[in-house]
Image (tube, rainbow, N blue to C red; front, side, top):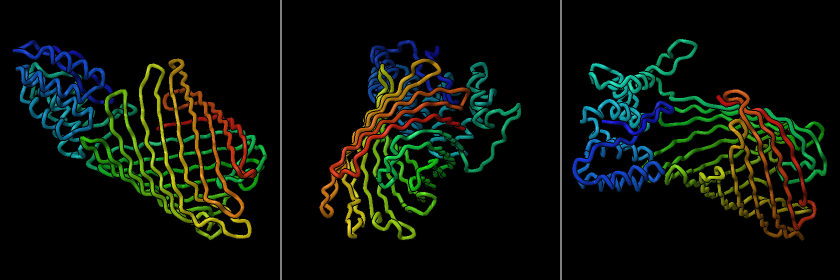
Length: 429
C-alpha cells in the first residue's frame, strides 16, 4: 500500500495513508486528507468516518482516525483506532509503533516499551519490515546515541530533563522598583535567569531563579527563587495542568515577599494554526519579616490567550483580569496596594531570515485603586517591546531587546517614562 507521506520528526511516525477505492467514499477520503493537512483534525475525523461508512478501506480509515485523534491529544480514542489498524499486515508495524507513542502519552511506560519492542522486531513483519520505523522504535527503547555510545534506559520514572540559562547586560534610563516607586535615576544592570524542569511520569518539577542587580541605584535590586509542581492531564477536551508554586522574593538583597500560588492552566488546539490557552491563578502573599506587611493578602488572576499561525508570523492575543485584596498602608500617608487590573497584550513573532527572528509586543494595562487618603489613583500603562534574536550555534541564542514604558498616573509620583536596552545570551538544554 503506497504511503502518501511519513513524518519522522521527534521520533514520531504519524502519516496519512491512501488506498485504492474499494467502494465509494473516495471523495470523502480526499476531503478528509485535505482537512488533516490543514490541521482541521475534528473535520478530518468526521469525513474519515463518512468515507468508512461508504465502504472505504477500513484499516486505512482506522489508522488515519488514530493519527487525527493523536493530534487532538485524544489518546484513548487514538488507542482504539490503532488497535483496529494493527490487524492489517501492511499497517501492522507503523500502527504498533504509534501504539507505543500513545501509551507513552498516557504514562504507561511498560506497555509503551512492549509496543516499541514489537515494532523493532523484523521477524514479526517479514518482507513488510520497514527499517526506518524499526530504527525509530529501537531509539525509543534504548534512547539516543551520545559520543558513539547508546544511553542505557532504565525503568526509572524520570522521562525528560530540560532547562535554560540567560545572562543579560542592560541599561534603564528611569529605574522603577518592584513596588512601583520611581527613582528618576538611570543605571546599568546585570540580569540572570535560569530554570530546570524534571518531567516524571505524571508530575513535573521545576526550579527557577531570577536576579536583577543595578550598578549604582540602591533599593531596586530584585531576586526570585521558585519551586513548582505541576500535573498535566490530557483529555479529549484539551490539556489541563493544575500546579502549585512557592516563590521567595528578595528586594535589595533582603527578604521581600513569600508567595504561594495555586494555578490551573488549560490548552486546547483547534488545529495546527489555532490554539486557545487559559490560566487561573490564586496567590497568597506574605512579607516574611513584617517590613512589607502592607502587601500581605491575596491576588486572583484570570487570563486567556488566543494563538494563531498567520502568513505574518505567530500571533498571540491576551486578555488578563486581576483583583487584589492587600492589607495596604494605613499610616500617616495612606496608600492603596490592591489594584483591579485589565491588561491587553498583542505579540507577533516572525522570522526575518533563516538565522534571525523578531518579536514585537504591545501591552496596555489599566490599574484602578480604591481611594486612600486624598489620593484617588488610576494608572494607564502602555508598553512596547522589540526583540531581535538568533541562534549562534545550536541551543545558544543571542538577542537584543528594547522596551519602552509610559505609565500615566493620577498620582504624580507614580507617573514615569522609561527606556530599557538589553543584550542577552540564552542557552537552552
